[in-house]
Image 1 (cartoon, rainbow, N blue to C red):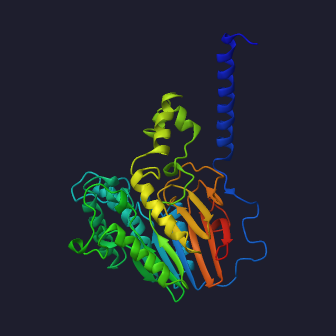
Image 2 (cartoon, rainbow, N blue to C red):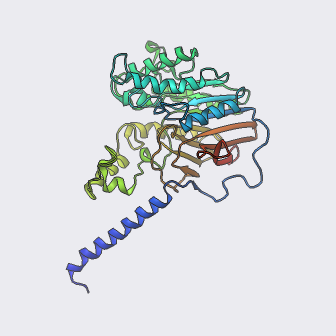
Image 3 (cartoon, rainbow, N blue to C red):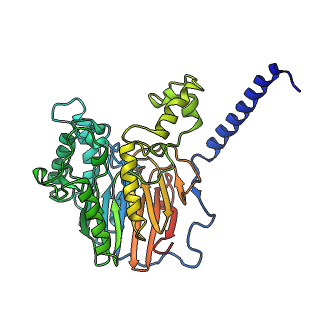
Length: 399
């Protein structure tokens, strides 16, 4: 039996070896797309070579775009708009302006906030299809108690600039649900997930011109919609994910455990190997309001999933985490399309069918009721022959 003085060095060696392996694996795989199966398309069917009857572009967290001419995602959105000039619907999934939404005139960040917002609005100003915006936590002044005034200011700015009075949904900071029928077979439902975790005033009831009278009424209305239109293909647009392999789902890199101060600044490489794990563990087990582990977020997620599991072929589209993720769970489809202007770590595996830490967005193409395709589009490298990369594609109406 080895003397006790050898145990600690041996343990440290094991921990160091595991750490090096984890770091190497993260470094090697981090920016590669992950597919649950090697063949990421339906093996018996191919994507139709005709124009879809309707196409929905779902892009989130675009609030850091400042140059629509040279920004890769802005160019990709513009390409999609040109390809779907008469049959498309574009939905911005929240966090439309970083870092705090649209501040009042005279605020020190007002000019850059307007520049970021106009970069997106100018893309769609002349578009003849439908365009919708929803709000995220950053649009509500990062969830602070005065967030409502920020989101109302942004709604007014967008609707007037685009001359589209009903393009910001749910309006007035209300929780929703709000319905828009895109075609005979496709229906959009907008819900304001930030309402559920927001500090300060949260509009509800007739006083605020909200159709929802209470939290219970919200779920009753949502359930009624799902039961009333079982024959329709339903897309639910929100900001917060219900499944995520990324930070808001409690997933962190080894670097974030060992060098936690890099979360504040990318150059703060101060090693805190044990103390540094406190923050990631906290966010995994409890977390602030924007994390899935937070009690208020967790309660909303639990109620929504309980309802969605009673139905099938619902597409729930969100942003919030800065990557691309697709989960096919219990006959429904859950998207994270939050890499419109930023990217961040996403963990492979788990319940995900596809994940990629890369800029881009998801697109839903509707051909026939039994022929619906989901695609992840990403900007092509500079000087590439193709306009964009199709990182993932799958027929989704039959799981």
